[in-house]
Length: 200
Image (cartoon, rainbow, N blue to C red; front, side, top):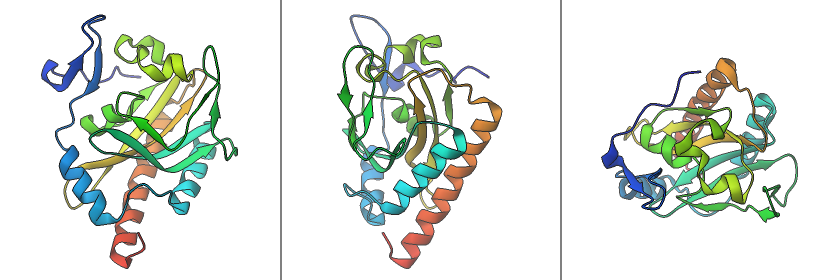
């Protein structure tokens, strides 16, 4: 597995206490919000996206899967699967933390995927210092991540991501990467079809 692509320093906010890279600057956020409103994607779960997340989890062998859309301040899981449990509970390192449909932009790795516009595979987040310090590691217990961007045909922007996470290390491998990239393309096609039919 190749290492994640380096970022320029101007793309990030810094934690002055640790000097580790945090959430990347997202210059497309205002335009993305406008496009998501145009598509009709907002703060309401979309049953078809929940089903997509379930299928993605099964195909990749992951216990948790999301279809995630991101604005200036937060992430919203319009599609969510958590090992068949309707009340999503992950086991954090020290105490239980409930994870719902929203997260702030400094939680998790999808904001990096959106800015990069490229898939990101972290079989063990602890292998990468800039990702190991993310809040989801200590607060939720996330140990591995794989995500791919949803690239809008009309604007070229990443509208959001699809992703899978695990509370243990997970050897996603080349096959997993190929799968999540292919499924991201499938979902983008479905989103555009739903837009044309006025289904969103």
